[in-house]
Image 1 (cartoon, one colour):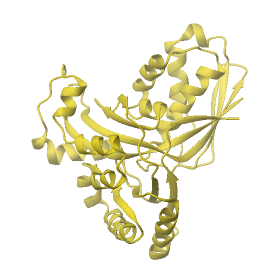
Image 2: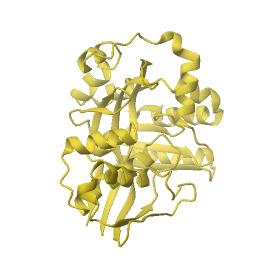
Image 3: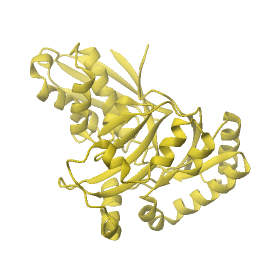
Image 4: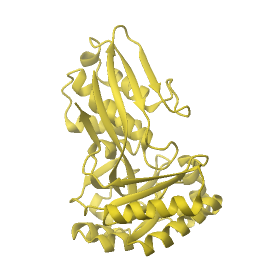
Length: 318
């Protein structure tokens, strides 16, 4: 049996550059792991079956779960290393909100890939794990790497960045509101395709970076300048998600105001939302923002968390 902790991620930067020939969007994202985690337990079982248990009713426990797909993909790609291993029971103790733009499902799948490589003694290289994870979903390669990274392509090309400053994220999400990532990107395409840059599939990573506007954020992280990181937060998907969800718009506005009066350095929506986060430089400031958000909204549907930045995506638990 093996237990792992899979951390959530937030987007410090998300720019939609244009359309790709495979139908996805060309993206430039700066992502950061935060220590809000699910606990994943892998238990070998006899026979070929894959069983998933989860304490959250909205998480599927059948073949549609990314964790299930992670197992079957390993079995398909590496039959000689997995056909002697039997089945697996996966138990997910869910703490990361569902449908929140925090890569909860992706981080679980990353933990399953990482954990089965250990449990089944597959001996996969980091490159092999990254290639398999990219087949499952665009956020999974980052969830495997963890820390702070720039992600390009459709999000699967991950380049780890120097450590960002030790910051804290105050995360707030309405349980009753979820945003479909495909809907968010489809709606953005419908409304803003006229702004897309023409793309050359042969462009190098450096060339693609040079054509977008992420350099200020990258310089801020490289300089470990917390205030500048907060200033350069950016998310193109806010343009379509916030108008469609007035409660999330109000949440962001109020959190920005609360954070500003409590030492916060920036507020933004993460990924396709609807989670909103504020950044602070101290735990005391983060707790103050958390308490004031809870007090001002006084809504049991609104869940608020404090999560420090972390350099890890997946952690094995003794």
